[in-house]
Image (cartoon, rainbow, N blue to C red):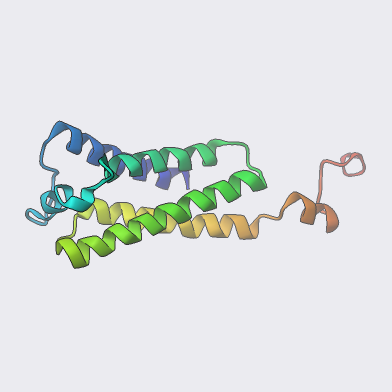
Length: 146
């Protein structure tokens, strides 16, 4: 998950740089990336969605680097769910409003989707401290240390 978050951070950083530098993004799909990057949906209340994505990936990375606890796993799940929903909305706008697909944006949406799937699996498969204690899995008790 860390590698995916860093990859997403790289994509979002590049798109944020492109926005503020006022340059055209590298794009193999002709002018699709430019069309998406300059559309009315490229900003949310004046804030570039690339910057929002960058902040989102930084928060995801922070939750992954924090101590592994149920709360941090839930935070990762929550942030990736929000990121997935936002990416889905933006992909909808690309397809049905802008009629162009930015490959950088699509790659970020795929990364966010995979991160969400991993966050769900991580949250569901890792037992909570209460459940682990009930089922006798806890290893921090004095009895388990003997």
